[in-house]
Length: 164
Image 1: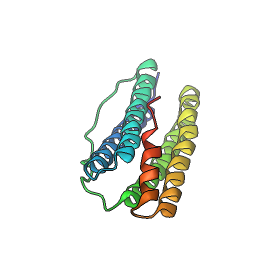
Image 2 (image 1 turned 135 degrees about the vertical axis):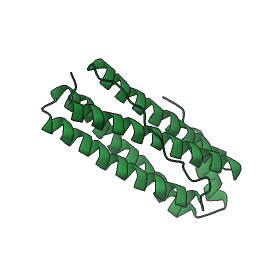
Image 3 (image 1 turned 120 degrees about the vertical axis):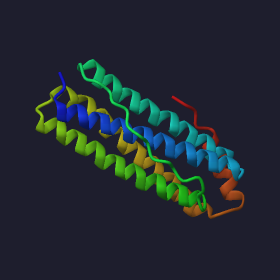
Image 4 (image 1 turned 90 degrees about the vertical axis):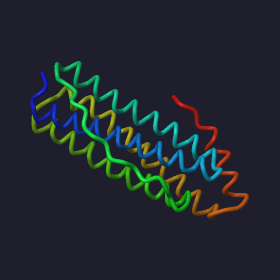
Protein backbone atom coordinates (compact mmCIF):
# COMPACT_ATOMS: atom_id res chain seq x y z
CA UNK A 1 0.00 0.00 0.00
CA UNK A 2 1.26 3.45 -0.91
CA UNK A 3 1.58 6.09 1.76
CA UNK A 4 -0.26 9.36 1.12
CA UNK A 5 3.03 11.30 0.55
CA UNK A 6 4.25 8.64 -1.91
CA UNK A 7 0.96 8.58 -3.80
CA UNK A 8 1.01 12.40 -4.01
CA UNK A 9 4.60 12.38 -5.27
CA UNK A 10 3.83 9.74 -7.92
CA UNK A 11 0.76 11.67 -9.08
CA UNK A 12 2.86 14.81 -9.41
CA UNK A 13 5.45 12.93 -11.46
CA UNK A 14 2.70 11.60 -13.73
CA UNK A 15 1.72 15.20 -14.39
CA UNK A 16 5.35 16.15 -15.11
CA UNK A 17 5.69 13.30 -17.60
CA UNK A 18 2.49 14.34 -19.37
CA UNK A 19 3.76 17.94 -19.41
CA UNK A 20 6.97 16.65 -21.00
CA UNK A 21 4.97 14.84 -23.66
CA UNK A 22 2.94 17.95 -24.39
CA UNK A 23 6.11 20.06 -24.70
CA UNK A 24 7.69 17.57 -27.11
CA UNK A 25 4.53 17.42 -29.17
CA UNK A 26 4.57 21.24 -29.48
CA UNK A 27 8.24 21.10 -30.50
CA UNK A 28 7.41 18.41 -33.07
CA UNK A 29 4.55 20.46 -34.52
CA UNK A 30 6.80 23.51 -34.79
CA UNK A 31 9.57 21.50 -36.45
CA UNK A 32 7.12 20.08 -38.95
CA UNK A 33 5.79 23.55 -39.75
CA UNK A 34 9.29 24.81 -40.64
CA UNK A 35 10.11 21.83 -42.87
CA UNK A 36 12.29 19.86 -40.46
CA UNK A 37 10.46 16.55 -40.68
CA UNK A 38 13.32 14.56 -39.14
CA UNK A 39 13.34 16.76 -36.05
CA UNK A 40 9.54 16.47 -35.97
CA UNK A 41 9.77 12.68 -36.10
CA UNK A 42 12.40 12.50 -33.35
CA UNK A 43 10.35 14.78 -31.10
CA UNK A 44 7.12 12.90 -31.84
CA UNK A 45 8.79 9.65 -30.76
CA UNK A 46 9.94 11.48 -27.63
CA UNK A 47 6.31 12.55 -27.05
CA UNK A 48 5.24 8.89 -27.19
CA UNK A 49 8.05 7.88 -24.85
CA UNK A 50 7.05 10.48 -22.26
CA UNK A 51 3.44 9.27 -22.37
CA UNK A 52 4.74 5.73 -21.83
CA UNK A 53 6.64 6.98 -18.78
CA UNK A 54 3.44 8.51 -17.41
CA UNK A 55 1.61 5.23 -17.96
CA UNK A 56 4.39 3.27 -16.25
CA UNK A 57 3.94 5.53 -13.22
CA UNK A 58 0.17 5.00 -13.26
CA UNK A 59 0.77 1.25 -13.20
CA UNK A 60 3.03 1.65 -10.15
CA UNK A 61 0.27 3.56 -8.37
CA UNK A 62 -2.44 1.08 -9.31
CA UNK A 63 -0.31 -1.99 -8.58
CA UNK A 64 0.32 -0.65 -5.07
CA UNK A 65 -3.36 0.00 -4.32
CA UNK A 66 -3.18 3.74 -4.88
CA UNK A 67 -5.33 6.09 -6.86
CA UNK A 68 -4.21 8.18 -9.83
CA UNK A 69 -5.43 11.77 -9.71
CA UNK A 70 -4.67 13.53 -12.99
CA UNK A 71 -3.67 17.16 -12.77
CA UNK A 72 -3.77 20.06 -15.19
CA UNK A 73 -0.91 20.34 -17.66
CA UNK A 74 0.86 23.49 -18.75
CA UNK A 75 0.29 24.99 -22.17
CA UNK A 76 3.56 24.61 -24.09
CA UNK A 77 5.00 27.31 -26.32
CA UNK A 78 4.00 27.12 -29.99
CA UNK A 79 7.04 28.85 -31.48
CA UNK A 80 10.74 28.18 -31.15
CA UNK A 81 13.66 30.21 -32.51
CA UNK A 82 15.68 27.39 -34.06
CA UNK A 83 16.52 23.70 -33.77
CA UNK A 84 19.32 24.69 -31.38
CA UNK A 85 16.81 26.60 -29.25
CA UNK A 86 14.60 23.51 -29.16
CA UNK A 87 17.40 21.22 -28.04
CA UNK A 88 18.70 23.69 -25.46
CA UNK A 89 15.16 23.55 -24.06
CA UNK A 90 15.05 19.74 -24.37
CA UNK A 91 18.27 19.41 -22.37
CA UNK A 92 17.16 21.91 -19.72
CA UNK A 93 13.81 20.16 -19.47
CA UNK A 94 15.39 16.71 -19.09
CA UNK A 95 17.69 18.07 -16.38
CA UNK A 96 14.59 19.38 -14.58
CA UNK A 97 12.93 15.97 -14.92
CA UNK A 98 16.06 14.28 -13.57
CA UNK A 99 15.87 16.49 -10.47
CA UNK A 100 12.18 15.62 -10.06
CA UNK A 101 12.88 11.88 -10.42
CA UNK A 102 15.63 12.21 -7.81
CA UNK A 103 13.14 13.94 -5.50
CA UNK A 104 10.66 11.11 -6.12
CA UNK A 105 13.33 8.62 -5.09
CA UNK A 106 14.08 10.67 -1.96
CA UNK A 107 10.39 10.48 -1.05
CA UNK A 108 10.47 6.70 -1.46
CA UNK A 109 13.53 6.59 0.83
CA UNK A 110 11.82 8.76 3.46
CA UNK A 111 8.70 6.61 3.32
CA UNK A 112 10.72 3.36 3.57
CA UNK A 113 8.94 2.34 0.37
CA UNK A 114 11.35 -0.23 -1.03
CA UNK A 115 9.09 -1.33 -3.87
CA UNK A 116 8.78 2.22 -5.22
CA UNK A 117 12.53 2.71 -4.81
CA UNK A 118 13.11 -0.25 -7.13
CA UNK A 119 10.60 1.08 -9.69
CA UNK A 120 12.05 4.61 -9.63
CA UNK A 121 15.56 3.27 -10.28
CA UNK A 122 14.40 2.50 -13.83
CA UNK A 123 13.51 6.18 -14.29
CA UNK A 124 16.89 7.25 -12.89
CA UNK A 125 18.65 5.14 -15.54
CA UNK A 126 16.28 6.43 -18.21
CA UNK A 127 17.16 10.03 -17.36
CA UNK A 128 20.84 9.34 -17.99
CA UNK A 129 19.88 8.27 -21.53
CA UNK A 130 17.52 11.25 -22.00
CA UNK A 131 20.17 13.81 -21.05
CA UNK A 132 22.83 12.03 -23.13
CA UNK A 133 20.60 12.03 -26.24
CA UNK A 134 19.75 15.72 -25.87
CA UNK A 135 23.41 16.63 -25.35
CA UNK A 136 24.52 14.61 -28.38
CA UNK A 137 21.95 16.26 -30.66
CA UNK A 138 22.80 19.69 -29.28
CA UNK A 139 26.51 19.04 -29.95
CA UNK A 140 25.68 17.96 -33.50
CA UNK A 141 23.56 21.08 -34.01
CA UNK A 142 26.44 23.24 -32.84
CA UNK A 143 28.65 21.62 -35.47
CA UNK A 144 25.97 21.75 -38.19
CA UNK A 145 24.97 25.36 -37.66
CA UNK A 146 21.59 27.03 -38.12
CA UNK A 147 21.07 26.09 -41.76
CA UNK A 148 22.62 24.40 -44.75
CA UNK A 149 23.50 20.90 -45.87
CA UNK A 150 24.77 19.77 -42.46
CA UNK A 151 21.47 20.68 -40.84
CA UNK A 152 19.58 18.79 -43.53
CA UNK A 153 21.80 15.73 -43.03
CA UNK A 154 21.13 15.82 -39.29
CA UNK A 155 17.41 16.22 -40.01
CA UNK A 156 17.53 13.07 -42.15
CA UNK A 157 19.43 11.18 -39.46
CA UNK A 158 16.86 12.15 -36.81
CA UNK A 159 14.05 10.94 -39.08
CA UNK A 160 15.39 7.40 -38.66
CA UNK A 161 14.38 7.26 -34.98
CA UNK A 162 11.57 4.80 -34.52
CA UNK A 163 9.23 4.30 -31.61
CA UNK A 164 10.24 1.45 -29.28
